[in-house]
Amino acid sequence: MRRAATDVGRYHIAILPGDGIGPEVTAEAEKVLRTVAARFGHELVLEQGLVGGAAIDATGEPLPPETLALCRAADAVLFGAVGDPKYDDPAATVRPEQALLALRKALGLFANLRPVRVHPALVDVCPLRPELARDVDLIVVRELTGGIYFGEPRIEGTERAVDTMVYTRSEVERIAHLAFRIARGRRGKLTSVDKANVLACSRLWRRTVDAVAGDYPDVELAHMLVDAAAMHLIQRPRSFDVLLTGNQFGDILSDEASVLAGSMGMLPSASLSEGQDRSQLGLYEPIHGSAPDIAGQGIANPLAAILSAAMLLRHSLGLEAEARAVEGAVHAILDRGHRTADIAAAGRPAVTTEEMGDLVVGALGEG
Image (cartoon, rainbow, N blue to C red; front, side):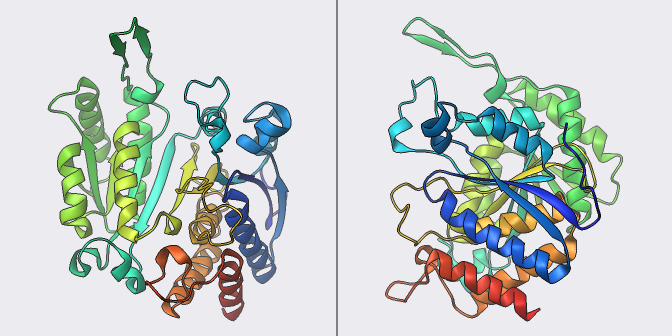
């Protein structure tokens, strides 16, 4: 059973660097967390665990029992990335990615939050025209434990395969309440995305969201079919505030939305358990993968991992001022023109992974 922080200002964070560039970007996020602790007078106990391919190499399991115990005892989990080319065979019985699915199930992580903001200094990095990209600020709230990914797949010979999609009213209510609360704290607009013209699960989803909306009269609710949402994310992304959707649609739409920021290296995420205060356990990770092709070169962008640490401070530790300080430091560094290779203009110099982390730490010291 997870313990609560024993004293105000003392927190236990599990650090799971994982594979590829995971250890590189996580090291910079950890450095930022230590700086925040020193500046604001908190005590952070940061303890590392094995996960993914690194864990398979060491123990034969992608999520060793010791790592799961560490996460259950923590106030929050900071996650790097999993994935290793030597485990790429989809038919393999043991794969690094199994660790993340197992963690979500074991920790009860039912909600995935992916904020997408286009920084003014990075508008030109976005593949959309500047007038479309400017001022984009949305968040995708994805249900994480139901739907087709947790159905009953079966293979029938060599000519037929079946996947099933299941949602219950309680599952939809739980994620909808969270999304409405988030919308209430933002611009008060929620778009629920489904495929109610085709899928029975989506019709249940829509009825349930409508019912939950009665508890939030101050939030404007709109329903949108997933194909239309995919189109409007490109045509008019500024029209969205909070996007609420199920597991499969959320997986696809959040990856599409990530392109708006110009690089996956810019986008954080949070996967949350139930709860509305500091007791809300969460797993925080950059949305990018392990990127083995650039691992060890010192060129990965750590800002998504650092912004994930800011989400950790906000959602699991209840430290809003500290989260804003980290986000402000990242914005300051971008305003000053510092770029890693993924967001640097052609022919312009780029900073290394470690240098970018140091720059954010330096900006935090200015506050």
